[in-house]
Length: 49
Image 1 (cartoon, rainbow, N blue to C red):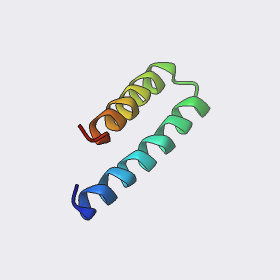
Image 2: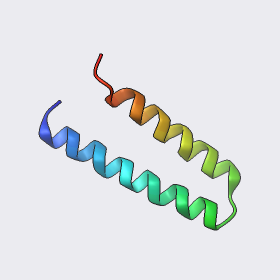
Image 3: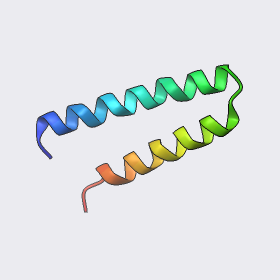
């Protein structure tokens, strides 16, 4: 995976982590569920085949 792509994925992961914390703090469980699913999908996409 190219370095720029890896950096982009790392930044996206950090942003999703922040969004999840915000959704939890604002008591938005539906948003938190979707963000958690996105994080799970992102980690699945990063694992080499």
